[in-house]
Length: 339
Image (cartoon, rainbow, N blue to C red):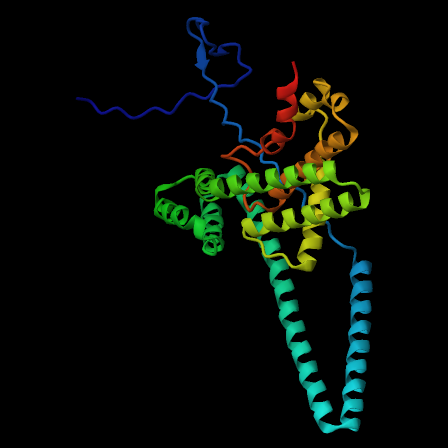
């Protein structure tokens, strides 16, 4: 046997008339150099994220910092003057006032600590959602593993996710692709939470619809809708691992309203809205009942926006809940009465 030196592939130019590109079903001319185009990379599904929390201006932060500092100094001076007056009257009154002041200071520190922890947790959830979207787009295994470990740590406070955490921890080493790891994490950890969140939004929408329909006062309707919206957003944040305090709720509500503004609020093209308008239900119902249905739909739309804002992972492997999934019961009875 004779040894043969491997030959290098012959170089050619694409503009050479002897070079043709192979096409399906088309024979190449004799003697031509056939070039088969490389298959294009599969397109990565676009991951839609809710808008980030609105950033306050530096001047606004400086204003509130100065105002808070002055109010704190004023309260401190007033408490100091009060304790001095109490000591001037009687020692036991002074010591009692000093004990109350110490209790107030301790409670204030605890509340401030909880507020700071709530803001940090909300920031962590937003960061995890952004990192998960980046891992999906870039198929980054290391980044996906970091996101999964942090989510498992957050899920330790939820007893309903014990089995999901155990199964997820056993599958970590078996997944190679970062995008597949994020999708598997979403299926295991987010499926029970999404089901519970859908129930919360649906029940809140039904309560608002019923109370608005039977309430005789518009002020009562407004207060009830506002309290229901605040409670719904807070319960959804707690469900997905957030711990929002007063400041955290303000920040979260701003993000939810911003998300509603970006998505167009209650879209006119939604299937449920088309059913309500198309079947003429509003014309057949009384004014109060029709107002209750509309308020229930608005509450459901707010709840869906809150789910996307508080959820620590974007919707990639699981479908996002639609308005018809959480508010279909508002008009089902009336549709059943139609001939």
